[in-house]
Length: 451
Ligand code: PLP
Image 1 (tube, rainbow, N blue to C red):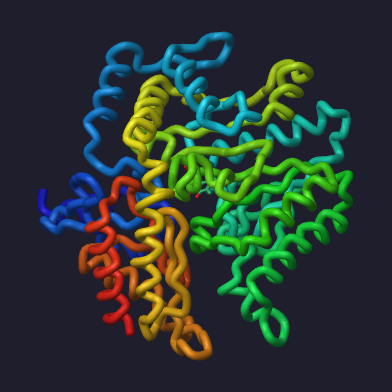
Image 2: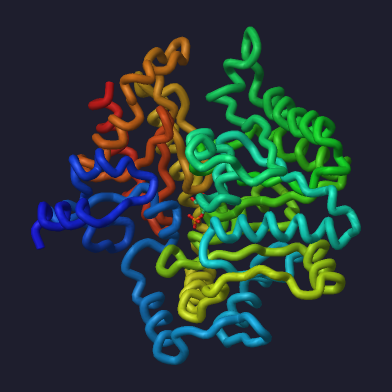
């Protein structure tokens, strides 16, 4: 089929996620036909370096035959059976075991879902159930962060702090509050009259959590949910002071920590879980995306012993679950994916080799006239676009510099994402050094054109 035929038929029937339907119908989608390694190909024959690993999920990259074989074998053996009503199947058993072996030792249970959003719906159900079982049902408030992202179901959207989503999807689920995000370039350096050092800013953001807990009453607060590094909000690595201070606040008031590992998990930050990079011991960890390297949809919640024990010992039936919780083919693919990540030493390579290499090459973009900051951790990076490098003044919003830069990247063969004027990358974890060089050169070219 020719590109314009795909586009016409797509426009006629397909409502795309996070898309202005009318604008897309006028413009037409780019049609992606196949992929291999870190590259995708479109219907016009162009090869594009996928600097976003799809939607932060293709950790093993495209074209892994082993994952196709795992899916095929399982689909032939048992394409579906549920895990409700006292049944299970081998892939769910093996995947649960494997996940608990990889997770920090205090985590020995997992609840499966079909996606990251469903994982966060599950989180909300679980934390409220936990405190109710503890005889404290009033402890039901959950605190998230402005500009955090936890999915697009009603609960995911409500836990997240994306103002445009709240604006369209509200009213949000009651009992959820938000505090400021630890985004130094976006907020901290502009704070108060003279700005704050990153470390002072990290402390101030943790103090905002303390303030919010006291405002709501600690006896009413169940949990704090946050991504170890905010992904969709703009690849925001918090100042080093942030997480230790947050941990101290949560311990002071006996409030659960939920670390959303949907993006940070499975090697993105150079550890199996982003929490390990920051020395966190979360009570719950929602997971998805890199769990199956995006080959089939699967998510889950890793549940720490404190919560698991209460749910198991005191809970009776938990009235929650999804038809596809632990789907056999998805579980088989996820298990094979974890085995490959482990056997090929990919997580260690991100930490010891590729992460530091990207950090060095990415930092070289900081000299560009429209780059105010270039930051990265593991294989996640961001560039802050500015109109005036000396003052850090942003471009006028009407120019939509980030979107322009993103589109220029895409036409020249690189997928980068823009969040306002923050440009993001999160390539597959199998990227090679020479492909990182290519990524950085393509990004520089797009910056030149944007300027
Ligand atoms: N949590 C985080 C941190 C995410 O980045 C996402 C998706 O981008 C989700 C949850 C939602 O996952 P899904 O799109 O699989 O529902």
